[in-house]
Length: 64
Image (cartoon, rainbow, N blue to C red; front, top):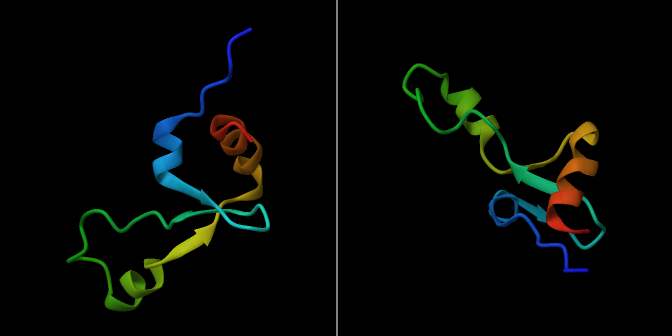
């Protein structure tokens, strides 16, 4: 039986912390930044913990 390959695209998008939490860049910071308020763009910077509903699927793609 061949080994499971991890999904390289998902590996570039998310990171697993030492405690096993999955963190990713917050959505909404790629385009149309001129029309968004400065407070909103500041709030969207940085990484956040991924929603609990998505964690199982993401960990499976990462081969964990």
